[in-house]
Length: 497
Image (cartoon, rainbow, N blue to C red):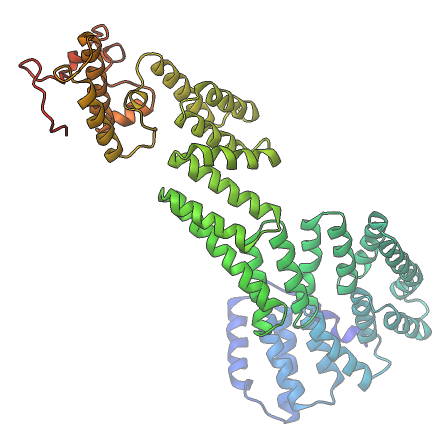
């Protein structure tokens, strides 16, 4: 009887357009359900022809109609099962094959298909019974004999794998389970067991590869989605973890384990995104606050703690908060010595503090880790320029302010020093020293109050140093029109702007 459906598995993808048109016409004419014998036969014939042409969805619909019209025709169920198998829906095919065997127990084609499905599902005893039945009526069935002979060994390997797992011999268990899964790829229990072995040895990606198929092999598998989400969360893939836990909640919105896990993951993902947005917008204080919130939400998993500390290290460094930056960056680097971005952030903090040698050392360490790292290369060049610049004139030190000083801080420092060192008001005897100091603080105010000039200075170029400009006129800043005394000599006023 297996021959009756054999030609249905031979698809003809090059069916002519005229034939397709005629088939479509017949579908339209006979698509309405009717219980007459002629209509049932017509649906079966159309289903067969559509299946042969590769139009599986349309063929399936006609087999549905045929079965509704006559539920006693075993061949209708078998042909529908054939379509289900062709589209990879073995779970849907199995009830139809069961019905075929119920209606016609000696139909070897259906029993062979069912045995193969049982074997792939890991239902070894059920498969064994079917293969024995086939060989009883046809001892020459080589496929049935081969599969039947393999089942005892498969059963032994499964038991050995479970024992190895229970004894903590995970590598041996994995090897045995891999053989078992090759024979029974649709067995969720085997995949769950191997996934646990992978988790135990820290191979989380392979564990995910085993758990993911079980979400389709088992209906409403909330446990698999929860497990997937927790593994992904554990390895730092919070966005993917959020996606998987949402799948669990689609199946059960009030799931007692999925819902609280979802709330935590969602909260952390939101905080992580906010922190990155603050970095992008250079909102350094907000960045630090959000990163600290991350640490409160997740205070156990090292990945997220390190990520939060790395953000804090970066944002403090960019804000010029030297002490806080150095403390946090050192924490990060104590666990991840080769974290290039943290090394560069610490180097920036050193630069803010005028510790040029330490900054150069850090940038060089980063280059040693990755010779093509652009930030490190630019950083070491800038550090070397700033070191050279500091040996001549450091406007920040002249005013006594930090490199992240605001314009208001600069103006306040300038006013205070201008009052002290203006030659007309200087109370000491060394007028020349007062004049030099006043020129220096006025030059510092000139550069640091101007965003463009300040940026040049921060990049290692003194906009008032003629040696760094075209032409070169010694070290006289007045060459560029800078004169803190005006054009009529000393004209001191208390209104320092």
